[in-house]
Image 1 (cartoon, one colour):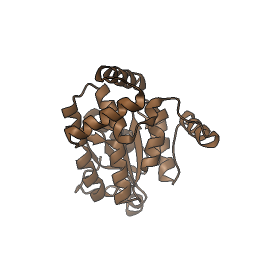
Image 2 (cartoon, one colour):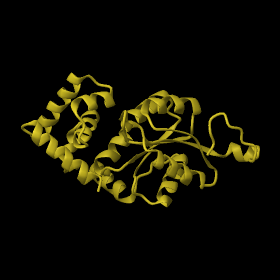
Image 3 (cartoon, rainbow, N blue to C red):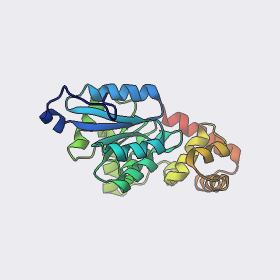
Image 4 (spheres, rainbow, N blue to C red):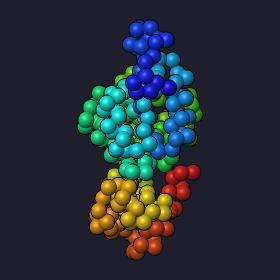
Length: 231
């Protein structure tokens, strides 16, 4: 793995010129290590940096200016969708690939709308990750075949999502996900850099959109959704 400030003498100028640089964002060190290893094994791909936090990632990405940033959507100090939007707004030439353990039916379309050039579930095969990276670097959008078919059906036939959770905004979905992971309102506020009052407002809006009557039913529904979408 190539570290910032580290000199690399083994490659010729021509080889370095055609090497695509990849930045990895995931809050699990073992996952980052695995992704870095997969990227490094691919010809003409190298890892130029990695981060486990959202704030640290944005600064490093803008400093390193990779060709592609692989971004996990579930970060401890924020949501990957927000980071994808920030990268897009700061430098649209940097392509992003969203990774998630959650169902693509909700997150794939949101990731593309945020500015990502592709979406992959973390359970994908190594070969699919390499395929997605190369397709995105070639200037194309990448979704798995089932996800692509689902999205095209929705667009071409005007279909709406069968999940009422899809009616939640990106911020409400981030709050809903963390409720399902067992976080308190205070913890959610700290992770998403929101006020306690703002989180409570989101909770009320979520209950209204999902037709839930109280905090207990909200918690149960959120836990069920997190467990189901991570299967």
